Image (cartoon, rainbow, N blue to C red; front, side, top):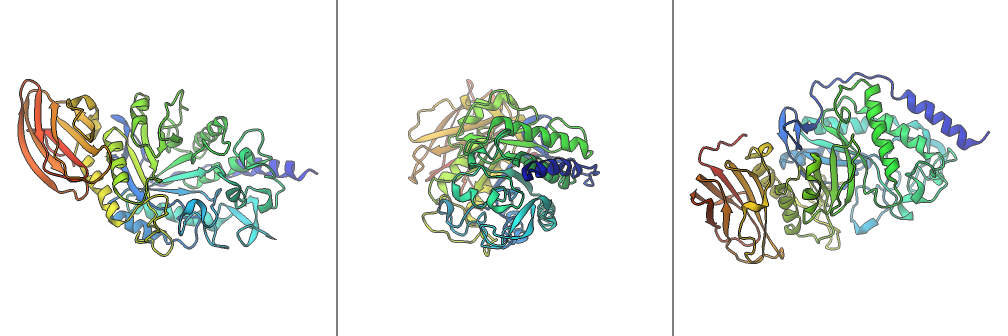
Amino acid sequence: MNPIRTAFRFLLLFGSAVAAPLAATNAEKPLSLHPDNPHYFLFRGKPTVLITSGEHYGAVLNLDFDYVKYLDTLAKDGLNLTRTFSGAYAEPYGAFNIASNTLAPPPNRFLCPWARSDTPGYANGGNKFDLTKWDDAYFKRLKDFITQAGKRGIVVEMNLFCPMYEESQWRLSPQNAINNINGIGGIARTNVYTLDKSDGLLAVQEALVRKVVTELNEFDNVYYEICNEPYFGGVTLEWQHRVANLIVDTEKEVGSAPHVGGYHLISQNIANNKAKVENPHPAVSILNFHYASPPDTIAMNYALNKVIGDNETGFRGTNDLPYRVEAWQFILAGGGLFNHLDYSFVAGHEDGTFVYPAKQPGGGNPAFRRQMKVLKDFINSLDFLRMKPLPSVVTNKAFAGVTSRVLADPGNAYAIYLAPGDEKSAPREAVIALELPAGAYRAEWVDPLTGSVNKRETARSRNGFVVLTSPPYREDIALKVVSSGFKSPR
């Protein structure tokens, strides 16, 4: 009997079995798009913007990582999102010049959804995997991770798959025929996430999706990302759509409440930097981008009425300024999610105090996380559901060395961010002309580094304009302008 076909048939049956009905036990409605403004979230009854600076996605699959300490740190820092990979993908030591990479567990410290067999020979230590059996210890750890996150008000992006960028990643994947006992996965790494070239792996992947979605059905603080950076490594759009459909179908089978796009939200990682999304899958509610600076992709896709996120940063040095600018510009351009990739979180330093080398492909540290809380507090001080990108409010666009982003609820509230065009620290003072309806306004100039209000003033719009002068600042500055009768919503 052909072992590949036998495994394939078994997995189809097994995958169906794991989707047996399971009632949701959490009384909270899961994270959803806000019905009044779907560019933002509704979470536990509150309008929500997700902002974080989180570890490199290995919190569950790396047995050496103390995720409770990590989540305690995020909560203490006032952040509300983390991103984790399923274990269908792992990285080798030294990949991408990342020191103490949480996605590169030491030998014999890698945990993934599939159980180990009795056959030795996994490429990173220990026995090979049996792709027809689940590892209960993995799902216990995954569910506790999400439970602990939920207790702290933190949402988890559950990333199901990731392409094999290089042979070194493919060599470590349980899906590779060299690492499993099932006689499948003897293919090129660029064929793994396809509908017709995966050598039996499609059934394995479908069973994994059903299993994860079933196991996590009860949680209100999770959403699913189909695949990290599918635009690399041969991942086809048809395969992504199949996964999205499978998530929706599985949630119907396990008894999830009716909800457009399924019970839990689904994210699709669209592109690095920017891209215009044509004919989005109807089940996808979050459009995530990486390195989205400047945030042009928001205006390109705003009319789709979905959350637009920037859920990975990096490759712009290790200093805070480029990433702080990226975060503020993205959120004040209308984004609803920002996730900085923070390399100060590693095994042994789950409090985010690891001092990484200068060659690290990104930044992150306790001070930067405080800056992200300043941004989160700033946007939460406004009724952002009523606001939309309105760059035309700033009428003097040519003031030297400064770019501006504006969210506005015309006549009521305006959030404006002034970023250095060259992202260099230099003394400056901005004179900004705003086109505002007639009325009286209160203005506050906020330091994005510290959150301190460095200047307060009142102004009256005459002939439709207000001119304001900032206090002296060195890098960037934020401005909140509200009508005299405005009251903070939170």
